[in-house]
Image (cartoon, rainbow over all chains, first blue to last red; front, side):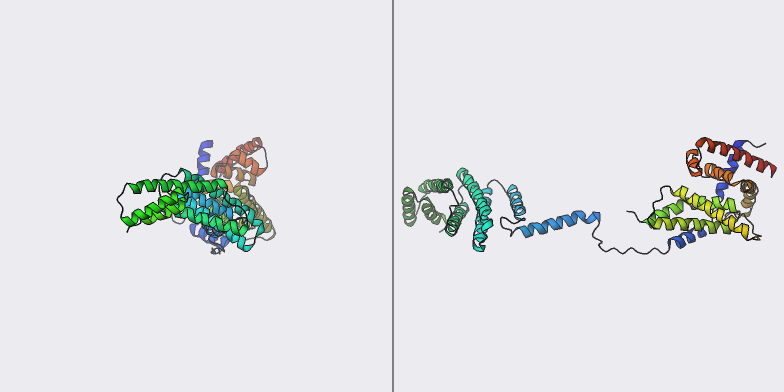
Length: 234
Length: 166
């Protein structure tokens, strides 16, 4: 008599029955046919490349946005990249960068005025006003004396003047103008007192005297111009 | 989506032995088992290739195999096939001595299994050779688990009788 377990053991031995290996392989290739290489139309449209593609698109868009004017959908992207720029700039260089940006805004405004795009004028003027008042705020608190900053501020003032003339509107507020003026005043005051401590040639003394006169007359920016001539290496 | 060819290739590798064995016990001939096995996989591949979802590949393969075996016997009933082939050809790589021992032991149980009726064969193969749980077998047979257990018990008794008689 055979027990059930013995019988089951025997049944399990039947597992040894297997098809021939070469037949298994042959049949598989017959059923599946020749492996045809899959033609990929867009090999770059794979998840692996998605990040790279996105980055490329973004870089392209940022490049493209640099020429955008207010009112253009890409303009906000341009402003974002500028904001990012200011984050990576040191506290000392920030006033100069802000001045550059303000000059850019005015250039945009002048471009729009030339193209006669009336609809875009209002947002462009707003942009200019915002950036100019930002600059003015920074200039008042500026401690450092910097020729480049003064020159850029002058350039900005000139551009604002041009813009105001072509558009026949006021762009910078009185407050802003005062800020610029007090900035020049602070800078001139500091430089004059500094120069008085130094030994100067006769010619230099003359120029300093003239600068002082300008200063007393309230023409701070003229005074500064003269002082900068003095401080230039002779 | 994963390449269907790859998925099917995995299914093939996993089940080819089982399906071949299952058919082999029923037709008792190597060439016929090979024919019907390849037809089983070909049909499954065609279903799969056309985007039809196969929830349970194993159940699908067994069902296809069973149908093909039924068709085969139906055809055979009409046309008498005279066969003189030796039905059992074990792995040719084994040496003669091993083969002889294996043959006596295996041959006996195999013959007994082949002589069982279809339902008995199926449950024994599925449960003891393929290690399928009762729940899955009952699903494949469309019976309750209790009925499947009873069937398995009867099948085992029948096989025991066959072996002892043979």
